[in-house]
Length: 285
Length: 263
Figure (tube, rainbow over the protein chains, first blue to last red):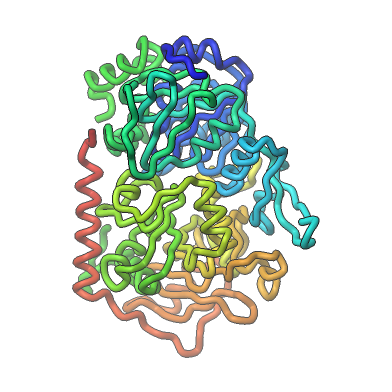
């Protein structure tokens, strides 16, 4: 059963150095507050898993949190490159980053296998691509019934999955709606699950395209208002596209990046203070 | 977009309009972000109001008012017919053969319509690390047909891809079929200079049409292999006033929305 607690306590209790950690949210509900807490607590040697690394992993990689990255698309959506991600891969800064690269379909099926307690998943894909040559976790498999050649990918079973959602109730059930992406599978494939939510409510209302993750599948729920900023939370706040564009010159420059993280992430107590800090400084404009 | 010339439209606008015209009404189209999304939405707002646009974030029947900056903008869910999970969109929709057209861009393409969106240079020591595969490999594998749209240049149209991210006609001839893919492969490549289609036998891309003002020499010069040119070369109809108005309105709305600090 989920316990409602502070995010700092949840991360210090449930995330360890060397863990495999998935922070998911497909453009929507990206758990930025959770990532910042990991950075502030200086967790090290993490294997970070995420379909679309986005700014959230650009920050974690640039701060030296990750030893390895398992992913399928690493860009700043609609803007361009993730410069910290590229710097780590192209020049090994701040230290070399091992990568394990898949397609979206491959990653999605790996989570499904993990959530199903199966060792691998089967799909049609990868055949004839160079991904199959550079990624050892892609292998051919023959269907025992039809003899058809297919592709197998191993299950993803993160030590910890962290997601952001709109609401929890007092028992720690979690409701999310809008684009719910891969969050259900990412949560159910993990050994431990931390969810940040916009608010705790007495009772959920019905929402179109909504899902509820039962409390029994979750370890910790932490309330962090605007915890997905600068991504968005459907029904609460929109995506701050200006932030994504403003990130480009910050992420591009090692020194600027370091100063920004020092001031707005390491130098603050929590995510609420982070939001005040970037707002006061007009840091993103 | 820059470079509106005496004709009253840009090469990019011609490319987007030409790409949009390919999308028939009622088509189920799996849309990549960028120019494909622009072209697919132009089609939806002009001649193909009943096309069903699918984005890999899980939105089916998306009807965005403004072009999404990312594949999972709230705009896409807002007016969608349905929103499903990521495994569902790839397994039950794409892999199951429910997608008529996959609409893709790329950084690099070769003569057989294979695409690279992964690296320039070697994989281990890349000169430029690109975002990677995303949904493209399986879109290229399983959509009934694939439309590709990208600007034509020697850097993009290369003799040999640095990395094969998504498969077109593989090494030509029957080689795609032999890989066991259920989708048909690319049927058209639309560029800022003209239109290329695969040869039905070899799968090699052949220039079949030029946009007004482009020349065969230009197209050959912008291609990193010895480009085949069809004997009966067509000329693309220039964008109509209606198409340009809808496209520019869409872009203006999008630019305004992006400037706005939301929330």
